[in-house]
Length: 356
Ligand SMILES: *[C@@H]1O[C@H](CO)[C@@H](O)[C@H](O)[C@H]1NC(C)=O
Ligand SMILES: *[C@@H]1O[C@H](CO)[C@@H](O)[C@H](O)[C@H]1NC(C)=O
Ligand SMILES: *[C@@H]1O[C@H](CO)[C@@H](O)[C@H](O)[C@H]1NC(C)=O
Ligand SMILES: *[C@@H]1O[C@H](CO)[C@@H](O)[C@H](O)[C@H]1NC(C)=O
Ligand SMILES: *[C@@H]1O[C@H](CO)[C@@H](O)[C@H](O)[C@H]1NC(C)=O
Ligand SMILES: *[C@@H]1O[C@H](CO)[C@@H](O)[C@H](O)[C@H]1NC(C)=O
Ligand SMILES: *[C@@H]1O[C@H](CO)[C@@H](O)[C@H](O)[C@H]1NC(C)=O
Image (cartoon, rainbow, N blue to C red; front, side):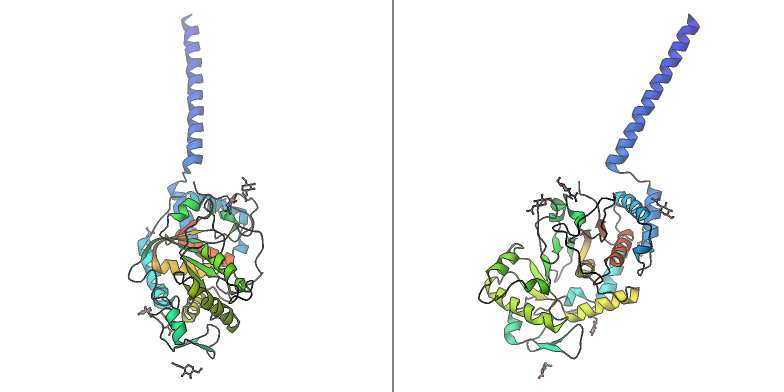
C-alpha cells in the first residue's frame, strides 16, 4: 500500500511538473512573441554586420529570405542611438553640403539680382529679380536651433495598414514626398515639408486663370513648405516658377521653395565618394540626409524598395496606389542599404513593421 501510494505521488508529481513546464514554455513563447525579445548578443551581431556593409553593395546579391529574416530580428532589437555617430554625420554633412544654411533659396542665403546656376550645367543661370527675391522665405524652420524628433515618410507600400499615423504625428517635424496623400491611420496628417515633382505640375493647365485645383491640392498640407527642384533642368524652371508666382499671392503663409543647386550637387558628390556612383539620388534619400543634419533624432518610415514585406507578403508599390516607378531612374535598393547601415550605426531609426 505504502509503495503504491508512493508511486501514485511520484506519477502525480511528474504530471504536475510536465504541466508546469508546458505552461511556462507557452508563457515564454507568448512573451517572446509579444514583447519581441531577441538575445542582445544576436542584436549586436546583426548591427555589426549591417553597420559595416559597403555603401556600394547591391542587395540583389543577397539571399532575400535570409535578408528579411535578419531584418525582422533586427527590427525587434531595442532601438539604439549613438550620439557620437550622429554628431560625426552631422559634421560631415555640414562640411560637404550644408543643408543647414543652403538647402533652399531664402533671403539669408540669396541676394536680389543674384544669378543662380543650374545643378546640371554651370553655363546656364537664372536671374533672381527683386520681385522673385521678395517672395522668398526669410529663413529656415531650423535657423538658430536644431529640430528634435523628425519623421521622414516615404511612400512605400509597407506603410499600408501600418497604423503608424499616430506615431508619425508625434514628431516635431514631418517630411513627405511628391504630395502624397495624408491619412491619419497609416501615415498621419502632420506635414512640415513636402516635395513636389515638377512633372506633377503638368497636370495643372492654365494655372494663372485657374489656380483652384492646385491651391486645393496644396492646402491639404496646411502651412507646410512645398519644396521643388526647379534648377536641375531648364525644363523644370518655367513650370515651377509659374506655380510659385501663382501660389504666393494666394497662400503667402505656405512657402513654395527651390532646392539650391549647390546643395544638390554637393550631396551627390558626397555619396559618389562613398561609392553610390552613377546613381541619381532619390528625393527621399536626399531629405533623409537633410534630416540627419538638422534633426537630433531621425525616424524613417515607408522606405522599403522591395515588393514583399518582412513576412514575405506581397506589397503595393506605394501605400496609396500600385503604380510602379520608371525603371532605372533611381537605385533605391542601394540607397536602402545605406539607410540600414545608418540604422545599425545608431544614426537614425528605420521603421519597417507596423506600429503598435
Ligand atoms: C543569414 O545568413 C548568414 C550567413 O550565411 C547566417 O549567419 C545567418 O544566420 C542567416 N540568418 C538567418 C536568419 O538565417
Ligand atoms: C558610436 O559611434 C562611434 C563613432 O562611429 C564609435 O566609435 C563607437 O564605438 C560607437 N559606440 C557604440 C556603443 O556603438
Ligand atoms: C558646395 O559646392 C560649391 C560649389 O558648387 C562650393 O562653393 C561650396 O563651398 C560647397 N560646400 C558647401 C558646404 O556649400
Ligand atoms: C552654411 O551656409 C550658411 C549660409 O550661407 C553659411 O553662413 C555657413 O557658413 C555655411 N556653413 C558651412 C559649414 O559651409
Ligand atoms: C547675371 O547674368 C546677367 C546675364 O544673364 C548679367 O548681365 C548680370 O551681370 C549677372 N549678374 C550678376 C550679379 O552676376
Ligand atoms: C489592409 O487591410 C485590408 C482590410 O483589413 C485588407 O483587405 C488588405 O489586404 C490589407 N492590405 C495589406 C497590404 O496588408
Ligand atoms: C487610410 O488608410 C486606410 C488603410 O489603408 C484606408 O482604409 C482609409 O480609407 C484611408 N483613409 C484615407 C482618408 O485615405
